[in-house]
Length: 319
Figure 1 (tube, one colour):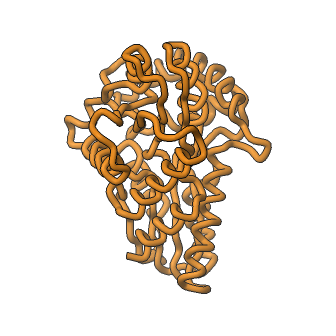
Figure 2 (tube, rainbow, N blue to C red; figure 1 turned 90 degrees about the horizontal axis):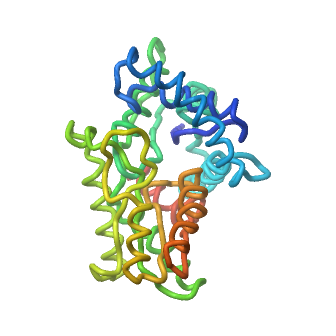
C-alpha cells in the first residue's frame, strides 16, 4: 500500500482570539519560521505579538470563516478527497491519502499513524508548498523526521521538496486564470503575488525567490502575456526586518496611480485558499486598489480541489 501524506501550515480551530493565539504560538515558536534566539524572541512573542496579533487576526478570520470551518482546513480536505479519487482511478485499491497540518489541525503524527494502520509501507510526503523554502518545506521535513524518530518499523519514505515549474502545475494555473477571465469582463493586468520571506533567508541559500520568479515567468509565458501585462510581488510581511520586494499592497497602489484600471491577482504559492488569500488579497487588496483609483479588481481562487490540480499532483506523485 502506498500512503500519501499531504502537509500544510494549519489553522486556528475557531475564529476567536484564544484559538488564534494558540495557533500563532505554535507557528511562531518554530525556529524554521522565526530564526531569532529564543531568549530574544520569546519576550517579544509572548509580550507583544500574541496579545496584539491574536485579537486582530481573529477579526480577520471572522471575515472569511465558512459554515464548515476554517477555509484552509476545508479546502485542504477537499483537495485530499479529490486527489484520493484521482489516485484511485489510476491505481485502484493501492493508495491512501492523509492530510496533516504543522501548527493547527490534524497533526503529522496522527496522519502517519492512520497511514500505518491502513497498511502503508511506502509513504510519499508532499508538502503543499510549490516553491521550496526552509520556512515551509523545511518545517514539514523536520516534523516528519521528528514523528518517525524512535519508530522501529520505519516505512520507505520519499519526500517531494517542491514543484514550482512542474508543467502540469503550471497548466492548472493557466486553466484557472483563463477560466476566470472568460467568466469576468476579459483580461486584465495580472499581478502574481507570492508569500514573502525575509531577505536574510535568501542570503543564507533559500531557493524560494528564484523558484517564485521561475513560476511567474512560466505562467506569464504560457498565458502569452507581454512584459507590461504582468507583475510579480510578495505579500504577508511580518516583523521589522527587510523582506522580499516589491510588496503586493505597494504594487497595487502603484498600478492604480499609474493608470491601471483593472487588475487580476493570483497567488500561485498557495495550493489552497486561506487567510492570506481570502482576507489579505481578495478583501484587503481589493479595498486598497479601488481606493487608490482602480476600477476593477479580480482575485483568482487558489487551485484548491480543481480537477486539474488533483491531476497535476497525481502526475507528480506517480512520476
